[in-house]
Image 1: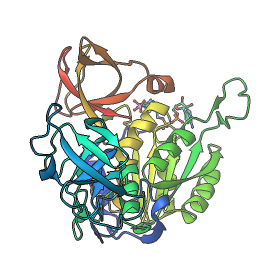
Image 2: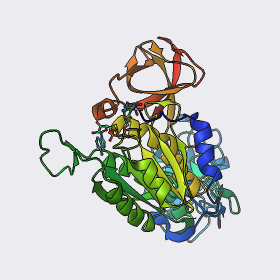
Image 3: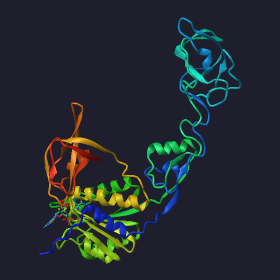
Image 4: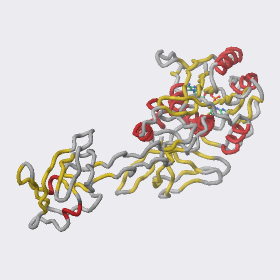
Length: 410
Ligand SMILES: Nc1nc2c(c(=O)[nH]1)N[C@H]1C(S)=C(S)[C@@H](COP(=O)(O)OP(=O)(O)OC[C@H]3O[C@@H](n4cnc5c(N)ncnc54)[C@H](O)[C@@H]3O)O[C@H]1N2
Ligand code: MOO
């Protein structure tokens, strides 16, 4: 009988991996337009204020607010219209007492004016004169210089993961290139004599490769470049040779399946043969995902994921994503959101193990409920049908129906 491995709590397992890795982050200059989900390697401050000129937030008339004080429908203020602010240009002139200038949303407030009256709060008397039917306060219906961001203001610290709105914000300031962590190439090998490519029609006893693609998606979302290195037969020689060339061509290696303890399970031996120190952790206290392997081979991480697709995803979420983030110097918590919901069912567990359960979310009478999608860890559609995961902590006997739980959204 092969001996069952010694399991470590996930936190300790991750620490053992990190302790064997060089904390230095490789960086590169990149077009901001291409930097989504990448991690900044520099602190950024605003080179100028935003907006750089005062702008109207309404279609209407730029005025001196004091000229409208006390104006009502029955006692309007009379102003003469001296021109129009062309969009994208300045108005050549100054708004004087009892004067107004036509301005559109986003247009520059002309000198002399300090507020905008919405067009529907005015009445046109003729081409050159209007009545203002309601007073405006100074600053009303306009954006001040620097109201969005002030020159010199800190924008992001190094380690920030760039989100879509961040790209917009950088472009608004003309920051078109950024220094980010170099993209990490993560090689994926699927093992298993029964596993065939998705293009193939599986023969009796065969299944299509799920893990290469699901894990590749997770890697791409974590700022990495997945390199699919194919499906390898269950022999030590073929796996070792494929793993060696995959690791040479990448920054880290992920091997799907073969992580358990049967004679067919070669991943640990292969990782040990790839370089020093080899396997650091074999077995973590999580369900699903116990037969997990974490190793480092001559400075590069090598991870053995359990073959069951749900286990592979859970383990990749627990170890591969934080690993990729750490190798990119990311400071933020994972970009995906966390919400709170009430549990629809009791969930039992045993202390000494973290359990991960996929849940569907449902709104009932204004409350959000998390309904477990139960099923064996081989069933990929239990994940497909779910919106997030909940965790039963290491020291817990389980969770109770009606309890508030944190749901990590996919
Ligand atoms: N006697 C024991 N048997 C098993 C144990 C155990 O503790 N004692 N643990 C079970 C658990 S839990 C898991 S998880 C699996 C882990 O197995 P391996 O990592 O060695 O992987 P395989 O046995 O090769 O495959 C497991 C399962 O996953 C399917 N698979 C593999 N690769 C893919 C892929 N790329 N796409 C889709 N599905 C894949 C494979 O066909 C098997 O059904 O071990 C248990 N056994
Ligand atoms: O750990 Mo296995 O990964 O429970 O299915």
